[in-house]
Length: 342
Image (cartoon, rainbow, N blue to C red; front, top):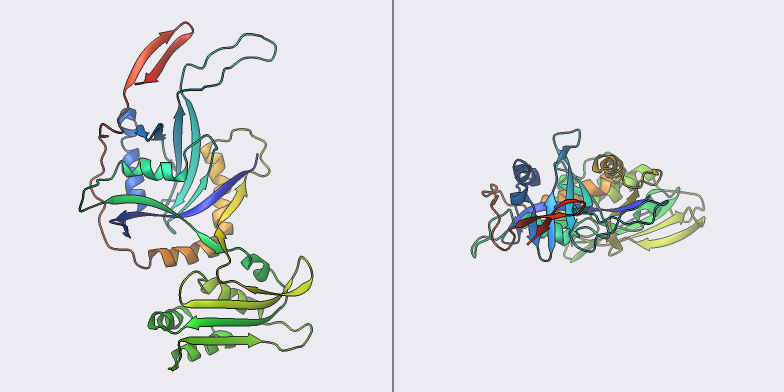
């Protein structure tokens, strides 16, 4: 059964400013205490949440993280097709959300369960393990990766006739271009040379094209590299207008890639018939999607970490406070033992 996944940059923040602390430090520290479940499972608003045993993702930078929401009320019954009797479920039902995290790009691929934890629930849960004082507010934040929704159309086009790039003339813009572009193509040489020139203007407009020849196209690899390089969501790019052939309709079209944004999402398990695959099985498909969107993920990562502050992870709060503490009352029923949160 196909599932939708969303991609996020994950960071640890101090007073709303991103730090360079690895999320792995926090999640591994929590996992070290996972056997003491009453310290790891916590009340979050009106929900009961907990992280389950982490699974190494095959590389030291990756973790498969199952987050669970415990359904303690409104539980379904179990039975058999050929029988009329119904049996209660005495144990808690756990609605899982699987997160594949890759620290190489600070990216998390998250699948969602309509009955499970939402992304803000996961943030709140993780934040209970971080100290919070008036002068120091520590938080984990999942920031959705934003991409241009039509960039794939351009990248897959077999004919690109014109590109018009408008840059805001600021020192940061020039520095970015000078430091980032290092390729031997006429397009990028022109871009770098022009960006270094001093102008008495607020905007620099660069236009590249092949004229009116019907089948002429610009060098596709160079154009794709340029699209990979430019971060359309930042201030230094005022607009990026492209004239290209839309393969789906086989006609020349125009598009402005600036402010044409959506959250990066994809689908997994399209060809898997298992009704309830394990986190490890889910993560295998997630890993392929991270590889598929690697260009967008790397671009987002570079922008995300650009202003991160150097800090050390504070002492992790393993003992939950009264607000988040779980109290368990054992009880016996006719068909077995159970637990009730009180």
